[in-house]
Image 1: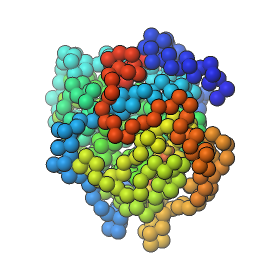
Image 2: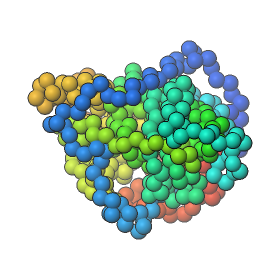
Image 3: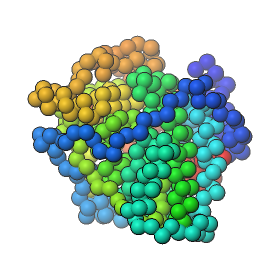
Length: 431
Ligand code: SF4
Ligand code: SF4
């Protein structure tokens, strides 16, 4: 970006909350000028039944006892805090994605403190005297009205809250909100256009999830919309609420849009009817596909699942992925080349069943080709940036190597200059 030398260093200053508080006063452009299309609303159930040959388990493989032991021994921490030394550099590289969405995000975040929150008094409105079923249905209908692509409901699980936020949430239910990111822009990944679409989706989702939390409060219950950078493992809740299954690319694959869906959580003390994990056949589709494993430019995705904290899944090699995400326009090659993202799960399952096990688009230029933003070259199936280019992208200037064994923050407030968890610090940047 031509303006990087000027705005890049300024964006590092944005960690100072006073620097960009004015952002919430910036008027939003009218939607046509922002080229924003409302996200589609997804049907409540998939229009196909999972073939027997694709079935594995509903949700994901879990060993409950090992999960509990892992949590007791080593609670999860906010990734941004654990690896905070690279946060200023990440912001410096991403200001041009963040800026277009920042006014909308800032306006939404400015509404959050008006909610009662966990430490606040009871919401001003009296509690609705309705059944848990009726309340759940009301929230679902309101989410649709607000333009959220889908919502699901899951029980709160303290194991999946980052330790920094352990006392910030009610422990009743989690409302999981999904918002579909623009299809066309995503097919250009890795690109600035694709990342702008991602942050616009986050801004639109934050606006809507804050509005949904306000709705829950008007029913007389507390509701805490989480920060957009995450206070808990959103993918865990997406799986538990039946919104999708974990793909080999480490993302929640939803039937309608694969991982082209941004997630946001709301915790509440309301008693709600929880959804169940579903077997959409995604584990078997992934085993036959492996496009993200083959196409990741730096080999950050292992081929086989392993048990991690009681859950059998792929663990992305953070030390490889994180520098690439920072320096190559957010990367997201693993999202771009995913057939479920591009064609939708129904088409992928239908093709699999008709062809006796083929994956739609596998090996094609359309699905697996991408333009590498750092050299401007297009790499088709089987091609990747060369070793010199890979070395460069794994070690961008001023990068401090990520230690994959580090699971706890080294020094609290290292990157934020204060004691607030980084996600809250980022919120406060925009407030
Ligand atoms: S974002 Fe890029 S580097 Fe990271 S896992 Fe996906 S393809 Fe690999
Ligand atoms: S690209 Fe293929 S293997 Fe990777 S997440 Fe998508 S379906 Fe699964």
